[in-house]
Image: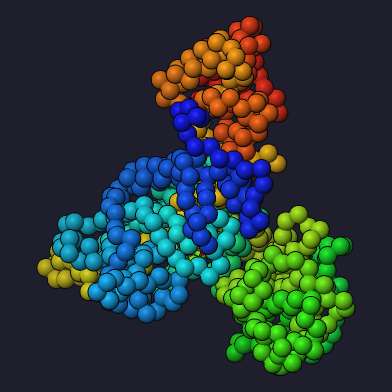
Length: 576
Ligand code: ATP
Ligand code: MG
Ligand code: MG
Ligand code: MG
């Protein structure tokens, strides 16, 4: 491939709404282009990476005995009404209507359609087990689409569904998928952890998430370095003894109700390190739930803009906040202030203030706040003007670092992860609801035992970048790189030798099956190198007249500090 034919569109600056590194770099490298909130075009360079992800996934799914199909993106509502999800699913499900006023959904996942296929096509136990998968566009109207492809509204998922005779066989299918997932994530060359996840209504342990380790990950994962134990925070909390942790309890007791405290005091209570130049607001509550635990999260997200005085707020003169004051929801804050919680400019209150809202107490100072999302709770977050990146400073949870692991093998550690895959034993939830049966050996109809298995195809490249980048740009693992090698000729337009050598190398590498791109755009060396360091092609070969005189080319891996001189004929060995 020649760069002049390809579409390369790098940017010097990332757009302002790009918050995390992967989003910034994917935008700057011209891999994706935003069309709307959470909706992106996969540009040629980005699509090549996505195709790499897909092909590894396909190879391993096929190897594990799954068979590919493609189900419609637009699906009739009737099927979704059979399982009740058309009503139950809430606003994440995009519902649309055709010209005949018939309801449809844009698939966020495809249990209904695949179960419908199974009840028609899988009639006998002899056809089981069966695992059907697709690599398809999904749409979820996420409350907070963000971080580029990491949490899009339109995205690509590989979703697979297994059908079995009985629970034992279904568990076997699940284990087969668990093995395939490990092979897939090993091949991506990323640091990841398979963690136990909540299997919801079904109970049991048959649900795991595959989490790519990254500080910017939205999930907290709990593991024991001394053993195999690993779970996501929800699962770990579910197993932990009920009620707040002693430290949390103590902290909450010390927060006056209603009371007044400076951010330093609150930080001290919560054992939250405070950045010297940034002060934090922390919201706490003494409100307990039926089990005596502070209401699920203990902390509410709140933002007050500095140009509203407290009296105005209390008098209900700030749109979006009621008279008498209550805590605003994340959505309200976003709508009202047009900014996303957690990534805010300074509020600029002049002095610490206390807000009293029925039985909940907010203590705050200059700005910043604790945050709460439906399933995710943060105690103190410092997102300061003086901090380069949002820094999570503390989780206030029932499970904290150093707790004994459930298997008793050592203390727990916590790290953050990006959920890139999720496997799930479903039981008969969907087959029962849709009366999906097959004839078993005894001639009697039985409902299928099912499992479902997802991989976030378009989330994966973003997760890979979070782990593999430096100040100059992306560093793709070979398995995911859009091109394996870039050939950079210097002065190709002036030197016939350079041109000939570059084209020769390009053609040789193509013949050897190497994915190579020849940068024939005629850019100056500095700009050309900066582009490829940004885009993150792992291997670079520079061809210049000076080198050619010595019979040598310059090879440099994206991670190398300096180039190595290599005889022209030996390049292929370097890039394999
Ligand atoms: P999350 O917890 O991040 O919202 P989820 O648990 O809702 O994800 P699943 O229903 O388990 O997602 O879907 C399977 C996989 O699809 C996830 O593991 C993730 O990799 C991917 N995925 C889910 N939502 C999105 C999204 N909005 N953008 C990109 N990928 C997504
Ligand atoms: Mg979700
Ligand atoms: Mg999840
Ligand atoms: Mg999930």
